[in-house]
Length: 87
Image (cartoon, rainbow, N blue to C red; front, top):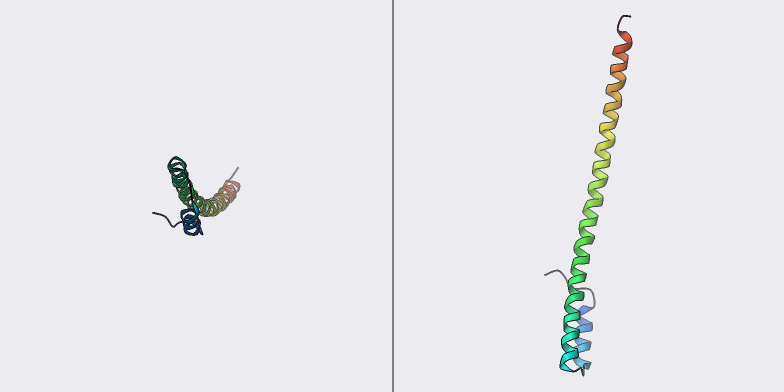
């Protein structure tokens, strides 16, 4: 399981110490807590994925720029060769 959100343990202890909830409300709070935990885990996973994708975009843009420069150089060489052809 992913690391818990900062301070989550403290909030849980506070709720456990001071909670005078009905069993139904406690069950709802527990379910809500579980959903929030899942959302936090999903959020962290998506943040990591987003970071990796951003890094991949930077790398691909760099590769694309290099390939574009090579295409320009090849085009210039072809134009030079074309201009050397006899009329």
